Image 1 (cartoon, rainbow, N blue to C red):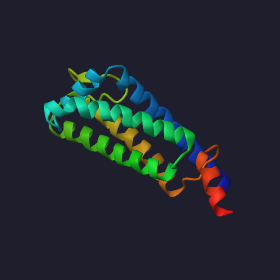
Image 2: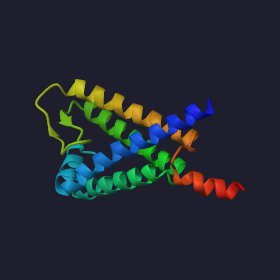
Image 3: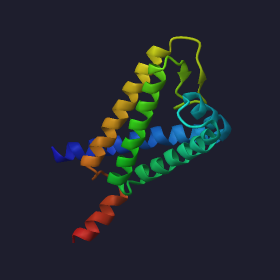
Length: 157
């Protein structure tokens, strides 16, 4: 059973790295638009939205690289989990306030004309799945092809 968990952790690590890497890369391509997307949520002051949008993009990229390398997996998974909880709370907040926006997770985001409720459910369920993957890595950070294995095995000898 341990081998299954190890491979499941490896899959979770790689999937999260791919998702965060892609999301961060899309945002980095247009940091101005990333800031505008953050502003649509109306959760931070308008003048801070640009900084938050840029910071999120670079944090996602950094987390993706660390997850891909398998370095500090437990800590990175904890930060990833916190990020997912923040995303879920932000999407839920927009939904509860009756706003109709694209979350901007894998695109530049924007205002939608209709059908946002269905999109919000999909976005929240997706982020809950990513939160589950991060939680799995918090509890079982040892995975295949990870730099952590080299570091941890050296310390245990």
